[in-house]
Length: 294
Image 1 (cartoon, rainbow, N blue to C red):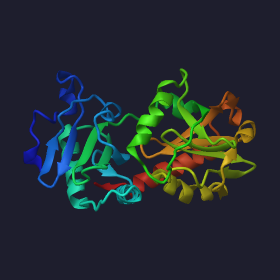
Image 2: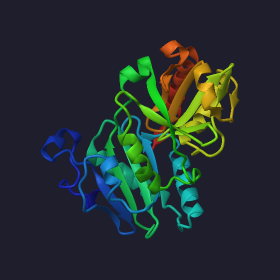
Image 3: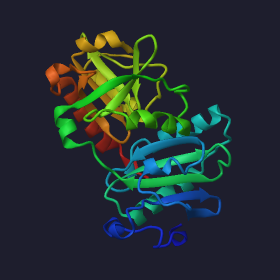
Image 4: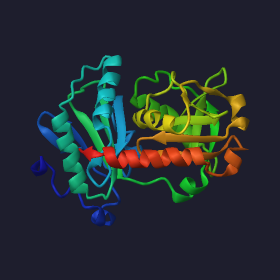
């Protein structure tokens, strides 16, 4: 596919200063890979240009390796079928297109999104941007989060509408707040705007088992965490927040992020605790072992 993509569309990261920081965005159809008609500076900006449908997001390791990519693609197909999008991915072709884009972009590591349109699923939208790790200050001191009364209407489907619905909440987060955690009307604590949420209470790690997106990183955490403490797929309640001993969030692009303040309440005395530290170390080792070529 390399011959389809010209140098005018893909530039090495070192050359980006000459092209107003645009990122690679392409459409993959049966004829091959072609650039989109729009130019954007981030995956977030690309949302306004991409069609309605379903999507998945992941990051790379060591340039062109990924974690559980087939699991991401399984969920993408499942989401499509649940909203009546006829989809059977050409996985070899999709992987080849992603590799081609990554190699041409030349980012040390990248975050990428795969979007399947509701109308016209035979043409898949691909976008990649430079991977930005969680700020070291957040990893060392923990994230400050707040809760918001917002629920994903169809949590088993990763639909593009959710990116649009959640954006105003993202945009209105107070300064210094890293993430918003969604809560149901009955006080259940569910998930983040773009993450899964976990809290430790009385020696048990709780995370919602229903009414949340089954995150891909969450699958690994549910394997790793029981080596540290028991896990219950039961949502916490808002009333539990002041009593939490530790808390964290996870996502495919961020891994494990400790939470040390929630709705103004210090968690683990406001410092990163040993449970989250051990789970994070376990996940980092697991990710290093399980990353595979795209």
